Length: 222
Image 1 (tube, helix red, strand yellow):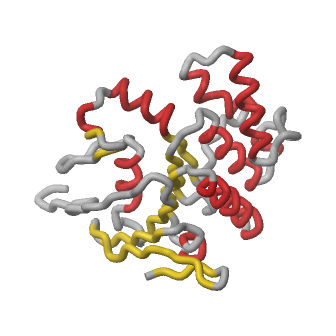
Image 2 (cartoon, rainbow, N blue to C red):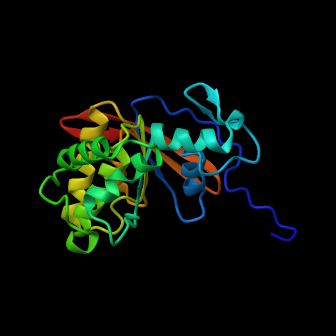
């Protein structure tokens, strides 16, 4: 910006293992959203290398990146990003539509995904007929419908009341227990403490990298 250079991320060196549940914390402008965008192949780093499953992402074309995002990654956003005039079922079908999956198979898999998140009786409801927690569950079903290995969540409980937020975090706990890698951005420490690892950013650098261990049923970090 003019003569000033701002590094959203400044020499970050980090490995996230398969099956990890990691929370990314930090104040606004700390670099956490940029970090999530790079992990999700939505942005490319200006310097350095990002390896995904051992492969340098810089070698992928835009078409390959799009395919990678659709097949290997699921995205959950704070604002749900649902199509307002489409039913829950149609919203969940969307990633498969881009992938050329036949209609009958799309309906089967979308229905299965919605049942898995507890919305089997809401298939034909539009977003304005659902609560905030239910809309986020539709978004999670959409993120999972192509059976991704990684789920990226950007403030997934930010627009929810406490009860709905807790139900979404419980769903993430269950997803991680079945082997999904989850990387979640949050401002809230109590939300982050559902993860097994808490990485805190400040001014584009990693300030803390805490690993959790359960003691007497409570997660503790060091």
